[in-house]
Length: 176
Image 1 (tube, helix red, strand yellow):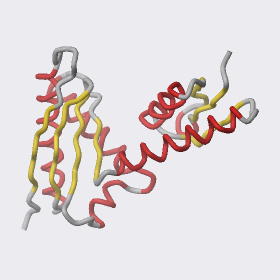
Image 2: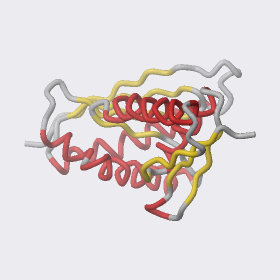
Image 3: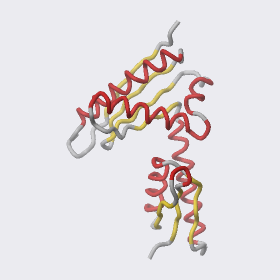
Image 4: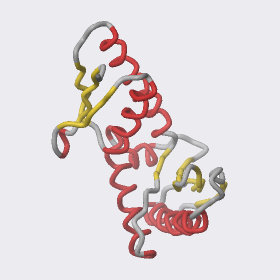
C-alpha cells in the first residue's frame, strides 16, 4: 500500500511587496509534487509543508513518528538530503526553465544543523577575540557556508571560503 502524503502550504510574504511570490508558490507546488511521488515510490509516510519566506521556497518533509526511513533520507551529515534538494531543484528547473534556490528540510535536520553552525561560528569568533590570527573550519557545502558567513558577519568578524570542491571550507579572521 503506497504511503499517504499530506501537503500543507503556508505563505510568509516578504515585506518588499511579495515580488516573485507567485513564481515561488509555483516552484513549491512543483517541488511538492516531485517529492510526494518520490515518497510514494519509496513507500515512506511524510507530510510536505511549503513555505515562501525571504524570497525563497522552503519545503519540509515531516512525520508524526521519527522513522528510520526519514532519517535515511537525511543521510550521514545531510548528504542524502543535499542530493534530494538538488534533484528537487532540477525537477523545478525542468518544469519552469528557471533555476531554483529552494531549500529542502527533512525532520528538522536543517534547523538543528543551523543551531550547530551558529555555535561553530561563535566558537571561532571567541578564538579570534582571544588572539588567534585565523581559524579554519571544517569543510562544508555552500548552503552551510552561507549560514556561517552570515553568523560571522553578525559577530563583527570576517570570513572567506577557501579550497575546492568537497574540501571548500571557511577561514575566519578579525579583518582589517
